[in-house]
Length: 450
Image (cartoon, rainbow, N blue to C red):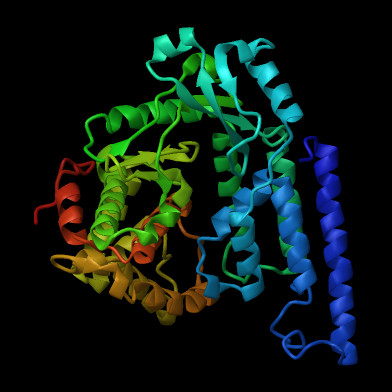
């Protein structure tokens, strides 16, 4: 993986040149009539040929960092709001994993923990077992002295990729130029805002000391929870670029489709419960919905939480208004949805009627699971298709970008909804919503009464 700014700039530059030549070749084919029927469609960008899609995926998965983070942020957009080609890019980048060689890992850990760091471990597997946008994870066993101090043996050691933190700003600037040049994204997605949010979140996620604090905080918040467990930190073997924590056993939830209906209902119910608790009880949320961040242990029935780099709090005034939007959606109150959406900043009050209607329709659809009394069956839902149908209208007529808090918040909520849909889970959404939000205290001291 390129680790300094000059080499990373070269890779972005070579990608731009490669895309340019690919686009030129495609344009020539279309002009001459030699292209395929699909490629000759005027609605398809000349940049989005099969060869260029492959170029983008290969380069971005090697670059990791800002490239992969922005892809993850954009990948929560419904695939029908963008071309099939860019949707494929985002999905393939999201699912890809390139590891860095052990020599780069050694260099980072030597600098962060000292040259004798291996003496603190009984064993350290040089081959990583997982990779993410800014780091990779190695399995290890603690030495006897450290093991006696912390009370466990097996650990996961996350090591940050070299150069990622120092290249965030330049990488995002290069990515923005590339996306604007190639017109890869539809209008109305407010790329500037996405870049700004990605910049802030990447700086957060590159600070493993901040993540360690978030993991410790979640450990305290969920200490008595009957379902969720949080890894324990090994603080003496952690730093700003290395994070060592208890190894958690279990299977990724992306593999949970094969479980029985009872277990799928159990997982879906508790994932939805956790989202609502994070918002309106803890007021502190881990906003990365990657299903690999949740491990289900079929022996204990516990769900382990991983990766706290994207954890954040929300301003009380924002949470007050956001709860009012969700409550209006649950009640099916169109006027209240419009009012609180305007108060929150989703709408300006000057939108065309078609935009206001599309937005309110979408909010009401999102509230549908909470509006249904008893059990809501995510295996027999039409929320996703109904929201999807409103996206083109909102992209064309939107006058203002969504509130910045909602980029990460909706990424997490979308992930929870999509997981429940994937599992075809049956979840008592209304009971969960009322039970958790009835305990929420607004800034003025008021509480919801159901």
